[in-house]
Image (tube, rainbow, N blue to C red):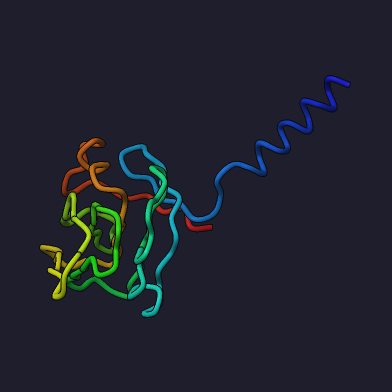
Length: 140
C-alpha cells in the first residue's frame, strides 16, 4: 500500500512540476513564455498584475539588431536583458517601471540583440548578472 501511495505521489509531483520552455541564467532557471511573432511581441507582458519569481518572457527575433522596448500597459516592473545570437548578454535595463502616461519612454539595447528576456525587476541585480553572461535555452 505504501508503494502505491509513493508511486502516486511521485507521479503527481512530476505532473505538477513546471514544464515547457525555459532558460537558465547564472544557474537560475526561468520558465518562459515565447514571443516570436509580431503580435506576441507587441503584447508582451501587458496587463499582467504579477509574474512568478521563476517566470519570464523570451522574445525571439530573426537576427541581431538594436532593440528597444517600452512598458505601455505593463503593470509590473521588469528587468529587460538583451542577448545576441551567441546568447551573450549585450546590455540590460534594470528596474524598469510600468508606464503610467503616454508617451511611454523606450528602453533600448546598447548593441544588436536577437533575444530579449524579461524577468521581474531586481532579479538581475540579485543574481549578479553582468554584460557577457551567457543564456542557456531549453525550448523543447
